[in-house]
Image (cartoon, rainbow, N blue to C red):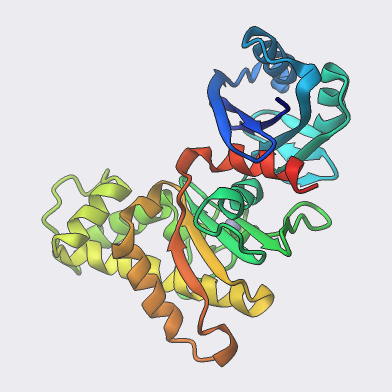
Length: 308
Ligand code: ZN
């Protein structure tokens, strides 16, 4: 039986999935991300791990990779968390495995491909995905392929500016990016700021260190301050969905990442905000939660090989 290998490289672990050529995952495991010497051992350790698992490399049709940074033509422009700069991952790994069928993409784009392949946007050609984690990642798929862009910034939806009145500084250098409002970090900062303003009541006691999950839970239980924070999150995400819809008119917008576990409570609010924009041609855009969780990257990486 022939295989495809789908690999999702993160800052702490590398997830490796073994797939059949139909895209069914038959095995998965993970190894530690060795960031020593700017990540120079990672490819060798992935290769070694495949050998240790007794994968017959002769039967591997191709390899797909999702990496945490912008990618252009198989080269990682920068992965700050790992220490890669202008790193030709495709070339390096091709040489290790003696197989030139190696595909590399940005992790958020690759996760979006995963949802197209086997998840919430299965079978759809045109979708956007917004991943709400510590930061915000985005991926745009058009006609089954992700938009990479000239410098790998295609689909970086987390840096759409949504707050103009009282913007907070974003890691990217701009002020008021979506990430400063709707990422787990943004939600916590917003809550803390408003809590200290004393304008709204909250029954949460540890107001300096609430987790995003605690804030969502409190909002569901009617906490005033938490609801003000979450309503702003939904407003910002609804606005971002509208922007994306006007640019690429996707059939589905998928929300993934830890914050999206708030589920329908959050999605209903986003849909409501989105509906406030009346341009007729984007009114039917479907907004849903992701289905593949942490496996999306591996599925998407395998999809790049099978859809090449
Ligand atoms: Zn930004």
